[in-house]
Length: 132
Image (cartoon, rainbow, N blue to C red):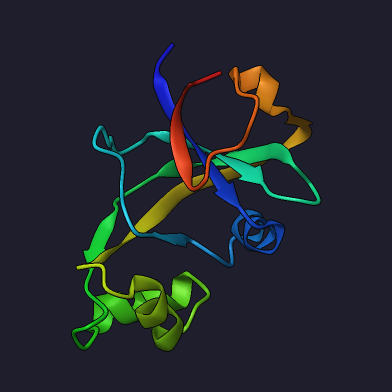
C-alpha cells in the first residue's frame, strides 16, 4: 500500500470540489512527504461524517497573501472559491499559505467510514493514511 492523505473538509466545500467548481484547497501547510499524484481522501465533517471521495493532488503552490497577488495567484484564489480578504484573514500571522491544486476528483458511490482507514477520529486538518 502507498501513502495517501485524509483531509477534513466542510460538506459545502466538498460539494464544490465534486462539481468541479472548486479546484484549489487552501491550507496553512503541506505534507513533508508530498508527492504530485498523491491521493487526497475527503472526510466531510458533520453532519455527513464520512469519507465521501478523493482528489489527486496536482501542483501545490505557496502564496503570501501579505503581498499583492499576481495573475496566477488571482486565478488560484478564484478557483478556491474564496476572496482575497478571506485568504488574508486565514493566513493571519503565518508566513504563507498553500494552494493544493486538484488534477482529478471523484465522489464515491458508497461513502467510507473512518474505521475503514484505521481511524477512530477525523484529523483536525489532514493526516497520512494508507491508500485503499
